[in-house]
Amino acid sequence: LRRYFELPVDPPDAIIGVCDTKDKGKDYAFLLMAYVYGENYYIEDCVCDNGLPNIVDVRLVEILLRHKAKMCRFESNSAGGRVAEKVQEELKRKGGITHITTKFTTANKETKIIVNSAWVKEHCLFKDKSLYRPSSDYGRMMNMLCSYTMAGKNKHDDVPDGMAMLADFAQSLKGGSVEVFQRPW
Image (cartoon, rainbow, N blue to C red; front, side, top):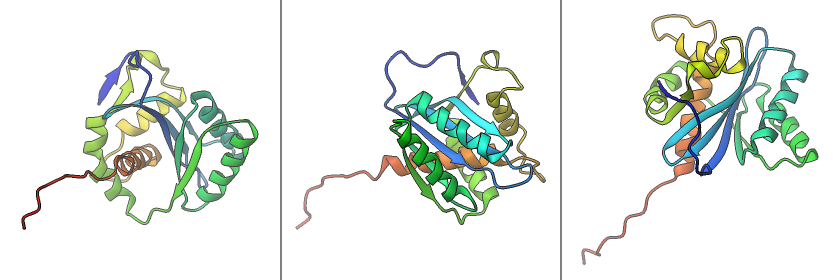
């Protein structure tokens, strides 16, 4: 994985987020904040929490407000759509600028993670290990990301799934390209 010590000096092109909400049991809510500089996505902060939903929802609002994220995509499977609405309402109430969109995912989670892993390795930069504690949200995120295996069962796949969501979201924002050419006739 690519690492960084500090963000570039110039302002980012955008600040975006993706959120895989907590379902039930030992599932984790995972929201990452990506600072976009051209083709590079600096993963600056995150919430990686399996606590009580009412506490986690407050943390989701706080991180979006703190980073002044312009857009955030929530996975709308299960409780995700309801959480997205609740977070959007609270952001508006507090004067936040984040526009939240939702996307229902039908793709197989493991397949989605595997096919997007190359994009994550090529475009995402993560903080140097010296900049976060292993017990922090960022430390939990890195542990879950680096311990994911394709060879067997994964105890926690919320972070790799969230990174695959970022890949999908980022690529959808790029749009298509237009090429002007001479008419053949």
